Length: 367
Ligand SMILES: Nc1ncnc2c1ncn2[C@@H]1O[C@H](COP(=O)(O)OP(=O)(O)O)[C@@H](O)[C@H]1O
Ligand SMILES: [Mg+2]
Image (cartoon, rainbow, N blue to C red):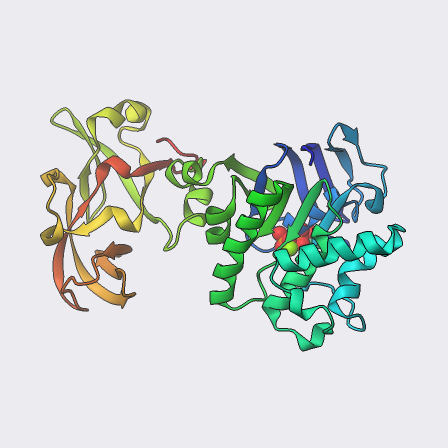
């Protein structure tokens, strides 16, 4: 096991700045996930740690060792790729033992390690099969097994679950976590899937256009996104964003546009003193909007707005409603048994204690 440190790392391909000033300290045994849209520099960062890319500038440490000039095979890492990269002509046993054989480890020792790891992954029965005789999930386990037998200081995962169907992905997510709890090997995992990041990571690193946006534990990123980008990227359905003006009235502040006039909670008004009379962006998560008729707790009568139901998506455990208010469409997460259908008019209540306000120019979070 080892900690990993990236210091001021840049990677430029010709005119493309793939990774810009990446700084991150990963703790020994930590499971860190880099998440962001396609092209944001995740794979490049991972390949730089592996030594498969040479960084343009900056330093990479594995343990206390500066590894910029250390070739990949001496970095003591094991990488699991999205396409598994198994050798098609070798059976599972040979695929898993390949690296160990290269390292001239005695046969009986190799045999013990491979069988133990195969049992750990539930593929002990498949050792004689070729990759083409395996399902996607089984192949993924072999690729994992091949990484585990090397007993590396660091695991690097590049979208390892992307080729699996949705159900298997959920199972493998749990299995990977279980594995991590047992092996406790420092892991750096890359995905474009925010749900995977939320559910698996000790800490999430949200990236956009080669730049780290936010690093924190998943719930913190969800509850306190640092800017509009992170707020919109983490969470599904996405946070609703509404242009508003901050307006003063009777000692209170309101977020106002043509369709809404929502009272800002007293304890938040101090953050808005410089924004009175100005345009801001109001952010509301779908679960913080409810149909008024379904609200039983106390609510501020000045947190209500009127909307018409546009589309309803029943998901069994909940119902997503896309609702129209003026020219704005918002998504709300409702009780599955609520009786609302397209065309209905209804009143909705916003849980104002959970709203976010973003600066319109910088898109940074005000609160
Ligand atoms: N070998 C390469 N040559 C030129 N551009 C590259 C190369 N590898 C990646 N890029 C570019 O760098 C950016 C980041 O790519 P990548 O790290 O693969 O993103 P991600 O893994 O987040 O989808 C993209 O704009 C991509 O086109
Ligand atoms: Mg990638």
